[in-house]
Image 1 (cartoon, rainbow, N blue to C red):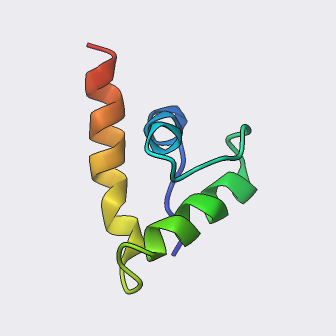
Image 2 (image 1 turned 30 degrees about the vertical axis):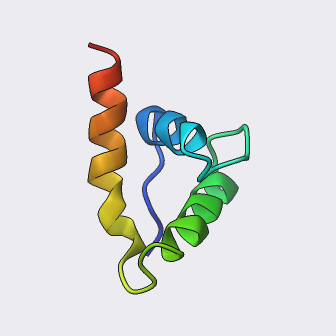
Length: 60
């Protein structure tokens, strides 16, 4: 599985150093997923909700 990447997830991932790529594209989604695999090799996508929620709450 590949971690979904939207503007919220991408912004937080960059702030946390999980994503270096500037564009929000397929390669960025792959980079993020690869880095999340360092946290959980079995289920790296489980962090999507936390990244998304944090990004949404920053805009409030």
